[in-house]
Length: 201
Image (cartoon, rainbow, N blue to C red; front, top):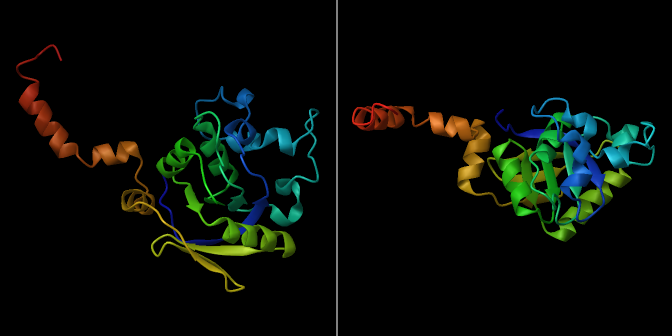
């Protein structure tokens, strides 16, 4: 997975709470076993009519929010089923961070394992960001993962918490396979010790 670098990104406000994973990526897109291309199905039922035309009122279809890399939403984002495709779709669409008052636990863990940063802030701070993104075209936020802060040009600055283990793996771009391979020498030593008595292995 790619490493998370500090960046400043355009903010798209999704002023909804309890957004579940079926709303993030509907079930018809779960046939895919690869991560690429899932961005086309992101929020599909909200973005498109049954005939496939864009719904103009939906936030991601508005010109001012095209190219957004930070999504801000209401509480309990990512609830529902544990589908990892939801995180893949957000990432493939171009989002690098999600800001909300709270996240469903499994969704949050999937984010951290796939390089997407979930930032939990107090509800009042999230409301200010949603309002600012709605009021000002081109509203951007700077995210500094090393310092665990977000800030905008209007002076709002917020600190967020993240476990040191997940912070480091995001900064270094380490997925589960990379973490395992980091112990390659120990794994090889274990195999040398245990395989000779059990040749069938």
